[in-house]
Structures are given as structure tokens and as C-alpha cells.
Length: 458
Image (tube, rainbow, N blue to C red; front, top):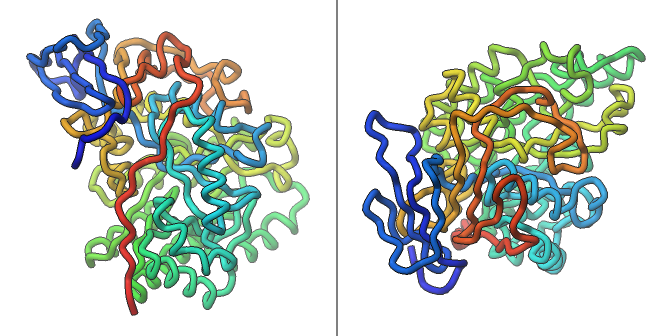
């Protein structure tokens, strides 16, 4: 891993604590030179670099959120990279993988280049932008491959994009991605099952509420779609990342595929771990996301899957909507919730509850998240990695106030929750980007380093 060139600023961070805390947790110093970590340890000296006294705060690597929707370009008034990346810093996130599910879609190299140029002027964090995997993008997949971590495919329809009903087209999409050498990132819900259950449970019931959502977008739909995607992985050699795994059964299916040596990765979301369908009455349409939030046993099963390594990472699927949109009747309310601005406190909560081992909790939002997208240089406090650091006080409590969070949506499913681990300082490649509750940068994010495409022949 080369550390040549200037990737950022130089900084020495002194007097931090390590995480998870050990029985004799000695202070840790971190030396970042030109944006890259040069040394980490108790005796690491500043060597004349600018100094930041951590004052006993705990240091972790900057988080990697593998799944966000910032709706920009096109719907900046709903979120935008300015506010979305501000929220990321608030949550301890220094790198994001972003999905554009509103026009203009990234279906050509030119469109993707224009999007990356747009983002480069607005992002406060480092970024990777997924290209869209639809029929129109098939001729351009190879041209887009060097610029994107992966191609996003909606097997089941969700906000902004319809699902794929045609298995022959789906096969061509997976084959095209394999030949271009990039991973498919899949929203796995079977479109035929979704349409059947919507007709049966929602359209036929004028009084339907979000209490039906986990039935209208069922475990059956997810499991069948994951099965089909894995079948295409076997057939074409495509690499696959399953987004927002919501059921224990789907996680088990992914485990079996990995056991067979198939190139399958996956992520879930904090809402699938900390919430359940039993919250429907309390939260109403704020609970409405796709795939649906399922049962308490699914939440526990997903925690077990993260612990076992069957599911790799936690990504927020940050998908803001104005509150007035969410307050529409269930059938017309859009799916999605914001949460990039709380990623580390929510993940830390899983550790405090004992649902995840502290090291596992950290890894799922740092190096395991980076590995699941094959992102070098991100997710570790180690020599040669980017100088992304989060400092927090594990003992300090705070109450979530939705109207104080950076997202333009100004609502949160976690409003009123008491959490710990609020980031106090966030360093992005040696630059102090967040401190004392405020951004210290207006932009400065850069495109994530990507592994070269690996085209498959035949």
C-alpha cells in the first residue's frame, strides 16, 4: 500500500485511549503525515507536526458508511451532499458509499463523471458513487468500472426505482457486471412477490397501516431474491454485495453461499438491529423502510450473523424525506429514514447492550465495512491507512433531539433516545473536520481509492 503523495494534512494526536478498552489501556498517540497514518503507539512523538491533545478521549478509525442516499444532484432540497456529509461527520463517518436513486442516474461514463465532479465540490467526507445497473447502462459498464466501487441493482422496487421482473434481463445485468469486473450491489426483494402482496394486503385494504409493512414486504420476498442473486453469482462469477439484509433467514442464506466459497458480501442497518415491527404503533410511518423492519428474533439473528461474520457490516441506508411526506397515509408515504448522523452512537449502543462484542461493533463500521466494498486505505488506525480518526467520550450521555440533527428532514426514529459515544472530534486525512459540535470544513472530501476492475471472461 503506497503512501506516496500528499493526501491531506499532517497532525499528531496525543493522549487518546484505545477501543475497546483493555485492562491496562495506556494512552495512544497517532502521527499522521500528509494525510496518511505514519505511526500509532504509546511512544509515538510529534516530530514537529501540528498537535491535537485528545485529553483522554477514546480514538477509533473514521467510520465507513457503505450505504447512503444524499439525493444530489436532483433533489438537493431534500438532503444534498452539503447537509448529508455534514450529518456524516456528526455520526463519526469519514467515508460514504452513495447511491443515486433519483434522476439523473449514472448510466453512462459521462453521467458518472459529471456526478463525481458535482460531489467533489460539496462533500465534506470521502466518497464512492455507485453506478446504476439497469438495461440502459449495459453498454457503458466497462467504461464506468474504473470510476465506481460497484453497480447498484434494484431486484425489488423501492423509492425512486422499480424492481426487475424479467429474469432474462437480470441475468444480462449480472453477466455484464461480471464482464466489466465490478461487484453488483443488490436491493434484494423479489418484485413478483412484492407486487402480489401489495395487491393482497395494501391495495385491498384502505385502512392499511405500517403495521402491515413487514408482511407486505416479507421475509419470503427477501429470501427468494437473495437466492436468485446467488444463483447468478454461481452462473457468471459475479461478485455480489447484498444491501440492508433484514431477516435472519436471508443472513443464513448468505452464510451458506460464503461457505461454498462464493464471492458474496453483505450489510445490514442499525434500524434492523435496534428496532422491530413491534415499534409500528409508536413510530407510525417513520418505521417504513424497504426492505421492511421485521421481528425481534430477526434483529437478534442479524446480531448473531454480524458476530459470526456472515454479515460483514452496518450501513445506515440514510434515506431522508421531509416529515410532511412521511405523515401521508401509509400507502403514499415514502420509505426510508435518516441516520448517518448517528451511526457511531447507534453502533456503540449495540455494544453497550451486549448485543455485539465491542470489537465486532467497531469492525462492522470500519475495516469490515471497507473490506466489503474492497476499499483500500480505509477503516484502520494503522500505518499506511488514511488519517481518519474519531475521538469520543464513551461515558458521556446525550439525548437525541431530531430537530437538532444535521439532516434537512429534522426527524428521527431515535428521537428522545439516550445514547453514548457522540463524536467530539473527527479528523479526515489529517484535517480536523468536526469539533465541538460543528463542522470545521465546507468541502474537501475526495473520491475513494478503488481496486482495479477485475473483468471476467466467458
